[in-house]
Amino acid sequence: MVSIIVAFKKQTDAVNIRNLLTRFGYNVVGVCTSGASVLNVIDQMIDSDGIVISGCRLTDMDYFQLYKYLPDYYEMVIMGSQAALGQLEYIDALKVALPMKTQEFVNNIQLLETTMMRKRKRRREQPKNRSGEDRILIENAKSLLMEAKKYTEEDAHRYLQRTSMSNGTSMVETAQMVMELFA
Image (cartoon, rainbow, N blue to C red; front, top):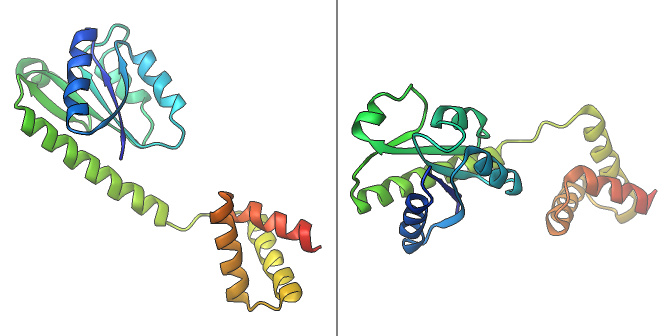
């Protein structure tokens, strides 16, 4: 599930949108009135994809300034009157005209969330680009495991993967631990 931050110039507008989203089971992690507070909430969210639902104008910046500061893994939804949305500069954001139909809004958020989860899955499935030193370290750790435990190369690699996943460490960190233990 992605984290959602709601940001409107008026606190009551932000709270109303938050209440609507939580009623439909969404994880709203912040209600803000300024772009600075939105960015502060994002900084506290470590490695999290998210959606910022914002009005056209906040207390300290407009939607475009906020959009420029958002990390790549955050999407933006801009809400405003039909006239205000018509004047927005082109950005890759979902635009929702007010007044809105609740179910239509929730369906759009659900579609955006599904798209983001697919992107996250693709990002995680991409092989990591390791430096030459890291690859050498992993190969040396596999060699040590093959000698010490009589593993095949495939078994040694699987051992490093399994251990890194269960310990919550990277393959490189796990390889370093194996080198320290068996060297």
